[in-house]
Length: 513
Image (cartoon, rainbow, N blue to C red; front, side, top):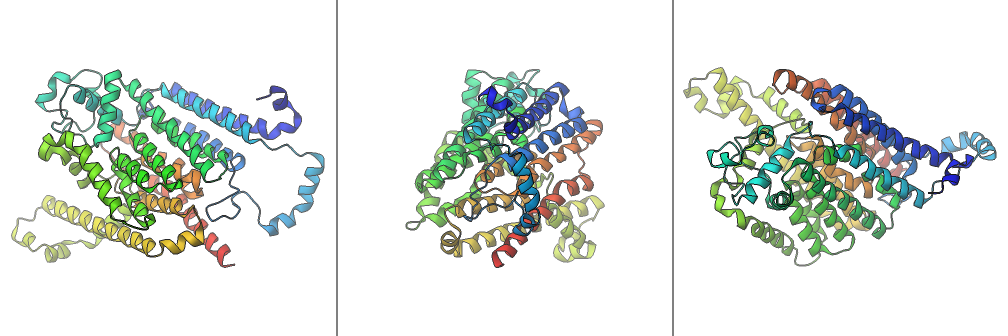
């Protein structure tokens, strides 16, 4: 970048862009200085908020939304025609006295990529404290490189006692539960551990997956004739930076293969997209929700899509099959009752718990009348039934949504253009997140690649608000008891749902008008 051009009076936009980047970098440096974030959550949230505000301004003022998913100009930052006419005299006056030049594509990408890398390298040198998941990854890799099946034994089992140390083992969560991470993730753990079995080595490995995702998004934007400036949405997203460069979450592997699936989708290579989807699923199970989209897009021999998917999954599980019944025991434990930061799921479950009083429970489960109905037995049965009913409602709802879009897929893709499959993928991912019983902040990272292709203000906002759930760590550090105040969820989810529905009904009104 030309320094003289940067210092010119007319380069105000460029100067503001760099200033925003520097504000973000100072916020990340301050986060690094904090050290153990778990014990300083209020300060962390303040600094994250500053970086997210800078990110929001950068994305909406310096990215390019000139071609939206419906082929119309994006109006997120534009006045309506009425307002433009009302203030045209002011606009003309400003333009006649001072018109800062627009930032070129080359300048945007140069600054965007440089600072996107700088943000990541700044956070890379922090010790993970918001989440301890990475210690389980290192442990699984250590078990695997010791020629032991990581699915066979929980970390606390006697068989694995020779592998224990005073750095990794004490920081593993849920030592009584065998690993839940699928084969592709385990293979990545194995490879990294062969190079170096350390937290920092794993963070570097996950950083490479993160940067690979950014590269794929750049290629997708080019293939779909969308502005490369949109890459800012991913490169500068604070949630991506904190969760991957900071905490080192395995989701980065699954997201890379999911983005590879999107690239093949844009290339109309459905079979390759299916392979990439299977690899993503085998890194983190979340990706399964995209299988219907590939099924929709296949015009002939549709059954080949799920068939190849199942075969690939089976092939990757074969090397671990000697674990027998323990192969999915960790996953069963995780999906049974674990719940954290849920939105719609929590509302449904609590509503059903209200309905399930003594009389209702006795009617639904007559065996309770024959048991010694202690408060503990009643509470356990009531909670289990509420969970079951909630999950059934959500599965039926999601299945109904999939069936609805399947029936009208051909019509939608003709009316809404080539970006419709990507928007549909975002819809499925969004429903999955709001229906989930557990919504850790890093789960929302799965939505960010879609926002590069089909921007959505509400989901972009949630990628900032979701970190408020870390507030629950303050009480957990003091008491050892996990609590989720309703007030935190309200601040986290209400603005998101308001903006989501506001934008939806506004777009409907514009379409009908």
